[in-house]
Image (cartoon, rainbow, N blue to C red; front, side, top):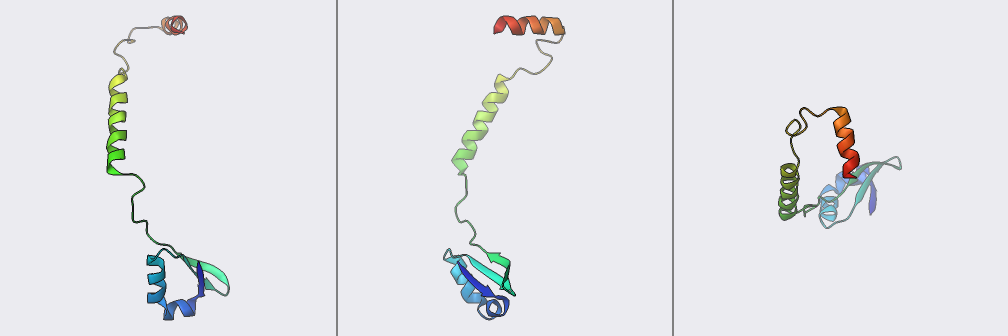
Length: 89
């Protein structure tokens, strides 16, 4: 990590950008207090396209396994639901 004042940062801006591109963190200060932090952009994605596709597939499978409301229990009373819930446990 490198820390430079604003005046120095203005005169060495290109060199500071090159440092950041190499993975270095640069902090720019005003009167000794940090006001800007230059960080390298992440080059690799956090999650791959394959992981996204797998997760979406799992979500689709979950949605397919969930019965839409109103299909089976449209006429069930609260008492019926309680009784069935207790007997399933």
